[in-house]
Image 1 (tube, one colour):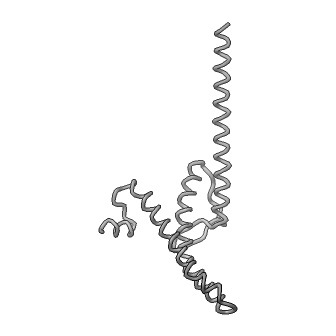
Image 2: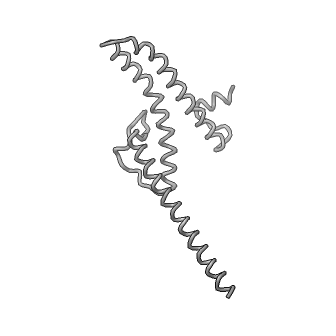
Image 3: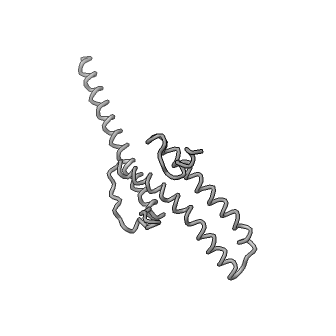
Length: 148
């Protein structure tokens, strides 16, 4: 019970190895909560019209904002870690929004960063393939010369 309270409070009980499990649990929590909110409002929104519908949509948006921003914060950490691995520039201010004092990537920023990571990853893989092909070519040439 104490461990659960510490984990919910964000305290790392087992060091750095505990963090991925906590992150996964928090993502699952936000996703489930988002589903529950959408289910709770789906029947009401289906039957509501006019001003009632607009009010319900507003309340639903307000409730889902925390879940969406929570999920975005996890995505931001993961994407920035991967972008740092490929030494990508993530300084575009249009990509970020402030949420409870944290800067998180907007949906547009996440998509753009994913695209840049994909391009950098592809370039890295192409470089390795070309390098390995060149080494194999040199080795085959040496073997052919030694056989003569």
